[in-house]
Length: 309
Figure 1 (cartoon, rainbow, N blue to C red):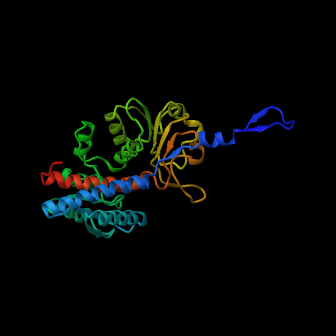
Figure 2: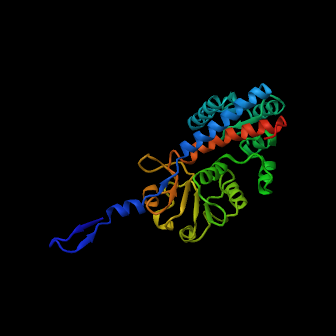
Figure 3: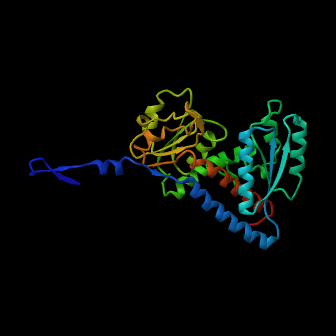
C-alpha cells in the first residue's frame, strides 16, 4: 500500500497491513478437527452396529471426587453418547482400597462386553498407579499406559496409541503440515506425552530432540526446530524469542497463570507472531485427546472381535 509524501511528490510504502499478514500464525482448530474425527468414528460405529448387532463399550473408572477428574470423565461420557459407544461408569469413593480397585479391573478384564478400560488419573495416594495400570489387559488399555503397549509403540507395532501424542500427529496431518524430514523438539519427557511423542514423530521420519529440566540452552535448541511440541507443564514457558520464524507450535499444556487465566505452555501472544501454525489453549490439543480415546475404543472393539477394515 502506498501514500503521498507531504509535498505530494514521491510515494511512501505503508507496511501496517503487511505486518498483520506476515506476523500472525494460522490457528490449528483442535475443536473442529476433533469434531470431524468423532463424526467419522460415529459413522463407522453405526455401520458396525448394523453388521454385528453390538457397539463398542468403554468402562470408565473414577476413584474419589477430584473436581478436574470429574469434568474429564463427564466429557468422555458425553463423547461416547455422541458417537454411539456404550459408556459404563464405575465410581468409587476415595476410601476404597487398592484391592477393591484391582478386583473391579479384574472383573472388567473378564467381561467380554467391555472393550476398553479407562481408570481416571490421578488416584488417591494409597493406591499405586503403576499396579492399577499394569492390571488392565493390554488389549483393553485404551489409554496405552500398560508396559506391553509402551513396548509395542517403541517397536512401531502398536495398534492402540497414547491419546494425546496421537492427537498431536492428527493435528499436524489434518492441517497439511509435513512431518517427514523436519526437525522436531519436544519440551517435556513425561510417560504420558513426551516419551510416546518421541516414538510417533520418529515413526514419521522426523529428527527428534527432547528437552527437559536438565537440558542446557533450551532456547537455542528450540530456535532450530521446525516443529515444537510443548508439554512441560509450566505456564507460558515457550517465549517468542525461543522460536524461529515459520515454526509449527503444538501446545499440550493446561495451566493457570498468575491472574488465574487458563493458558498453555506457550506464550501465545508472543509466539503466534513468529510461528506459521499454532494450537490455542483451550481448543487445541485438549479435544483431540478425547477424540483419540474414542478411536482407540473402536479399534480395540474391532481387534477383539476379529473385524478387519
